[in-house]
Length: 557
Image (cartoon, rainbow, N blue to C red; front, side, top):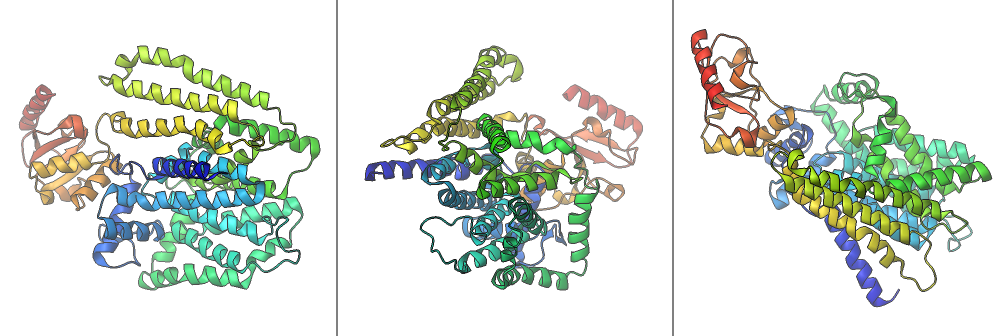
């Protein structure tokens, strides 16, 4: 590679990493119930200087270990409290996972596979989406990825012709394995040990290298793991006697074995989740999977490294498919292994029927392009007054189709004197443009601000006394987000709320509030942007007054 080509390749990588992982981290406020709660806990650690006990609204909260809170807390301390700072640990974890997987691809399959992976993995929907989330999923996946790559080194999968004949103890890999696995345990808990052990044991059983799996139990790796993971668990358990029961029993065993947390999904739930997470490269992944399965049936042979990646991703999917509680982010650790298999399939040389891949990609692109005109024609009716959003979606779909068309043309092993990064870059540039456009139109996807940020600002502008405010009924994520931005917990309406003067609810005319009777009069509020109504509560009012206020609310609507 010439100096100019190396500079161009480096610039392309930097642009891809920035656009996919670090661009527009604050494009939306905190979405869903988890982001604002995790951000609150991280901010509380900075404010109280207590980096041991996670606290939500001043009370111990043991749903997750502290790795994400530590990272977000440090970002808050260095860069200020913001959505971008809260999501920065996830973006950094995604970058680390990509770099270590590229190194593994280089050692296992060569330069071409590493180059493809560096561009394909960051541009998948799963990596882009979770790198922009203030949650524990990406830190967990990133640390577990480093642990699995280190385990591959310890197991001898990265040995090549340049490796010394006499094997040496991989001291650095053992330390890194123990340390990164400990960080994964600090990110989400003992699931990291189960996923790593299960994948390695399945690989050892398939490849008949059962004794080699014991290398991971080297005292040095155990010592590194113990030194990194155990101190926090011990100190937190001593300070909080209920910690082990709440965290281990309720948020691990009960979450996995029971439907108590109400995230029940069918066994096959993660199959479509994986296909969506691999977009826009889903067709190539399906092609490589089918072709690899056919090759395995015919030859009954696969490389040990390929079995390792298959067991890594497969056990993760199987383990969480058996769980009674399922969320899309659980199978994120399988994504790097799947994309590495995909990258390797694009560089394989021996008699690959690439015309089938090209036909599949052409058909996929046509399926994307054909509905665009129809969608664009119906844009004014589908967008509820925002045709630009539907137009933006159509352009994004067209760019994804263009990326797949280019991949259909360029997806082949590099010839001599051919610059592979130029071909890979041509496939990825439309996807990067689609990502930037998606960031731009993302806020217009929602009818009103779901984060609670606009709601908090409206309450502050109207000088509503927060001590006199209660929440009657509204989306949990918006409620928690409002709490974060107000820096105060606004409690739900209940029997103890009789002294409250104001109530927020997304049900008109306070119809969901008990006890009754009471009078409820609307307060001028921007319902179109917030999605909720603000009412002034007149306790002890008559039913006649309540009906009168209902009439006012109806006229207002």
